[in-house]
Image (cartoon, rainbow, N blue to C red; front, side):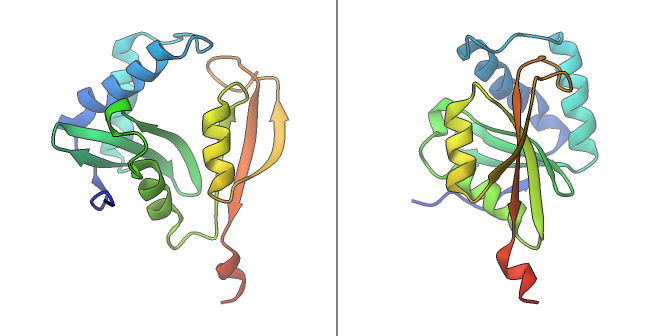
Length: 152
């Protein structure tokens, strides 16, 4: 069964989306907690208000979200209860629609995310020591090009 269509996140969704993010942080031993919860909520509210966040719901509420500003994907998270149901794929496919390219950074240690992005056409273009990210973890810059945009 394919997930419903993504919708624009609203401010009242912020606590549930932040809980998805925090759950990932708590379940990921290599990922340090670098900001207070209040700061995460403030940032999530700002990007939601700016229209960057699209989400998918299930019967229990927000289950996955993507934060994107133009061609840059800043975040993509799926609640564990909703994983392996195509929600990440659906959000990424919608983000690709009409875009000539997308780019993102993924932590080097996040092998499942790296495999997910590779499976969806992203390629590694650079690596860094992590000096440019909040966690100071080595990361990988990945990019996706819309092959069809070259045809038009």
